[in-house]
Length: 341
Image 1 (cartoon, rainbow, N blue to C red):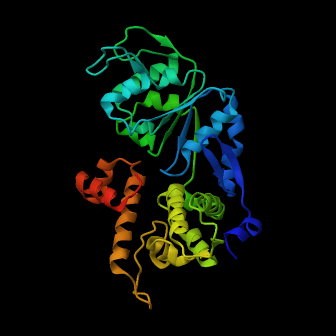
Image 2 (tube, rainbow, N blue to C red):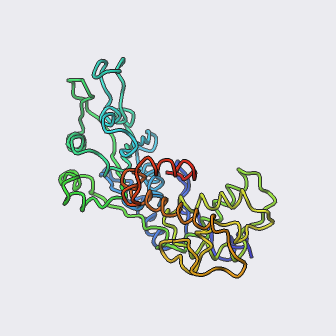
Image 3 (cartoon, helix red, strand yellow):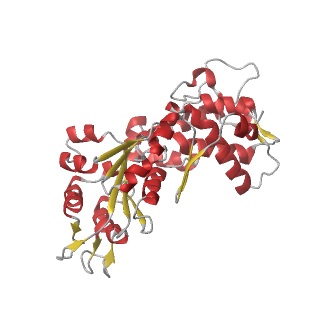
């Protein structure tokens, strides 16, 4: 039995192709979520997608856009947590020539670029309070003003937002405007973490295996061994689908073949007896065949860093605080370990 056999005996399903990739799985939780897409897409209401980092929020947004009357228009993404606060307003609304130092020409923002289509505001919980007021105006009145421009512009677009934060808790803490939260949360959608939909793992493994096999030229590989697949299905996946994709890619690249074996998987995935939901990666006792202590400790360290980054949506300042590290130390470790962030 290998991954190819999983295709026929355990169900492999592409639930929804989108312009940003495929929503793949077979769990009832994911099926119910996908079945709501067409109904939601018909409306022009604002949608708030919630879920942990790496669960596939962007693909769900793409599916909503693709099924809507705005499908022929652009789907424009702005990650509110990836752009410095000083530049975020300009990125969103654009700016006039001379609006600030370095503004040598008029530049349109993401709102103008999304005209007639969908504006996807990813990591909306990272948006500073001062800018939240202007976003509320956009949602309520469908108008905005670029930075340094006294004119008011009308727009025709749909706004979809996503976050891995608990926005209700952010409202209570005074970090997110209550009126904006309710304006965004017209249609709430929550994507469960991968640990809560284990039935999707085998389908995702096959999907990524086939893609990586072709991309990496590993036509010699037949699939995953039963032991390797069992480990993947019982691991806690703190990094969700993104982590699973990385693990499959690594295994396909390094496997001797003809199958991907359990030994081709990271230590964090192989340490089943102590892994649990968190995927700690530390064996409770020394295996009979021994182990590579340096590799085990390194993998454990890397796993905790991935969890901290996943929990904070990639915010290195907050991730460093969770780990008791200086930000510069964490950045150096991420680079050295080549951890996706």
